[in-house]
Amino acid sequence: MTCTELLNARLTKDRSRAQQLLQAGELVAVPTETVYGLAADASNPDAVAKIFTAKQRPANHPLIVHLSKLEQLDNWAENIPPAAYKLVSKFWPGPLTLLLQKARHVSSLITGGRQSIALRMPEHPLLLELLSQINMAVAAPSANLHKKLSPVRAEQVMESMQGRLAAVLDGGPCRFGIESTIIDLRQRPFKLLRSGPLTRKELEEVLEELVLLPIVHDVAIPGNMADHYQPRTPLLVCKLTQLSELCMKYREKKVMILRWSKVETLSSDLALTCHEIFSMPQDKNSYAALLYDTLHSVDGSGFDLILLEQPPQTEEWLDVNDRLQRATYKRAIE
Ligand code: TXA
Ligand code: MG
Image (cartoon, rainbow, N blue to C red):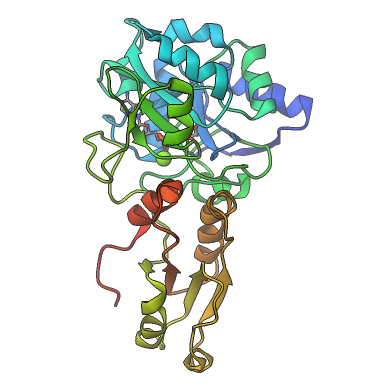
């Protein structure tokens, strides 16, 4: 058990402390524009090994390496196709992870024994400054225990990971609130491995070629599993038309209802229950930015069940629907 320090990313002395800890091979949770990452010096195998222990993550689940300068790309990948440069010149720093062929020297600890490597440059300016000053790339999965919800605030990292890492660097809430888009550029047609804030359309426009969508829940990559991203409170996703019935079915329970549509179709039966209703934002980006944050706060408020009204089933909402499918409770509600 380590005593975890809470550092403030806006303070120079706290950023220096985070640098010092990373250079000493310790784990530091860092803010990014997507979710908080559990960072370790990617060139130090002992430091990288600590990530797996702290997260209770199986060793064959590969990690994303986070760069702070474009020149670092060649240190980590080989046979980089021109398409990679097209994408990074438009989207880095930003919520896009590239899957490329790994450079020979890269430890298989990072890649889960694979020949591929996932690379991204995060957009948080204070993190970029901190990393580029010490010329370090960090391996960083989301800073949560294996299969649990990704944290989007420093307090959420503290709550679930305190004692398992040296420090948490508080850089405020994450702007996107959902994990980066991952695209595999190793062979054509290019394909999305994980949907995220950047859509297939945005990538296709820059690449000027087709990108395949992920087959949800069926991508054979350890770490991309059907039961990831789960809140502690059981969550059921349902259509608007099923909401009233489910509210009545679980009337004895303390239920949080997360609505998307604005129409007032819930019956007055609700008044007989101890359910609470929270309206989620209408537009996709605001919804995604609030999703994990809302689930974290429901988890901390003693609810028995979350009933979530399914948001639109369009491609724009692919990342939200992907995470919701994985967050859904897979057993019977008692
Ligand atoms: O937004 C993000 O990407 C966040 C922040 C912290 O950067 N990171 C993140 O990391 O979501 P993690 O470890 O929770 O998810 C990484 C995903 C996993 O699904 C993993 O299987 C995939 O990336 N991945 C990493 N390296 C890979 C590889 N070599 N081949 C295939 N998939 C890989
Ligand atoms: Mg994760």
